[in-house]
Image 1: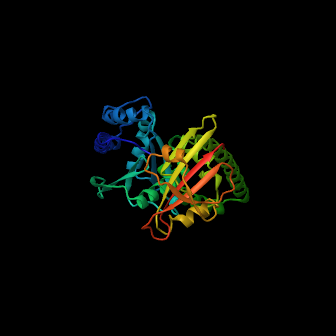
Image 2 (image 1 turned 90 degrees about the vertical axis):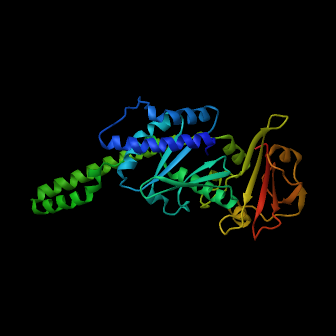
Image 3 (image 1 turned 180 degrees about the vertical axis):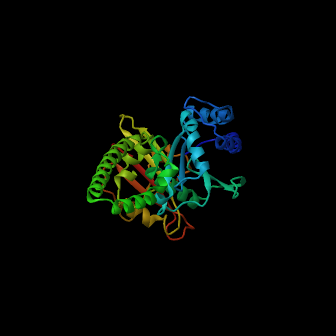
Length: 342
């Protein structure tokens, strides 16, 4: 998701402190134009911009309560600076995240394997940071982030409501009381105008929704590897879950045909285990032991095992192996996949 050095963490901390100072200036009336590049943001521009230029994909998801606070309104105002250097930023209203198992604090994920949690005081100051590579925690964060990202709105399409819009329901009640005292012609006219506005708003929303659907990020090699193996999240809709591979490699055979290699790490919890994986992708129970293909063991970056339980599979060119962990509890396992010619 994000791949940054410790130096970039320090840059992020400096930007956080500078933003608190700039927030005060925002409250005093400061506003930026889209072409502005303020000096206080330059450290982050240098660090993050260099990472993005070398191919790092940086995605930033923000879950916000509505109506938003004054600080979130300021943060939304300056987010064009993040977008300008190549970050992908999306916003999700908290009411749309009610059914997502979310981590309890702000975090950064690096290379889909390391998590840095950041803890803030009630005043918004950073008080501590904590690193973890615990597989179950990493899987939780990966699943939560992808779900949030899928539901969230790209920055360009997320419009903050003005404060006076939040008083609409109260104003409508007052207007209805006044119309109740007016002659029948005025009531009829009011009803007609409400219908016209409703139809117009519906048409605008339909157009905006259609436009936003075109803003999905381009497909990556990881996506293509999952799709060729028949394990991409869009190929199994309605399941309510999906799994993100720990390793995904898209390669080519000697004849030029695509070959995908995937590795999933499954934990022992009720939500992330072998039974869940098989159910999500409509796979059968593992069968007899079989050797892992040599090219799979070479392509993946880890020290892969020599054999695993082969899952009987009807998809041509795909072989799926299950390697149970000796000390796992009821579901801890590694899944290895080789898919060719799809």
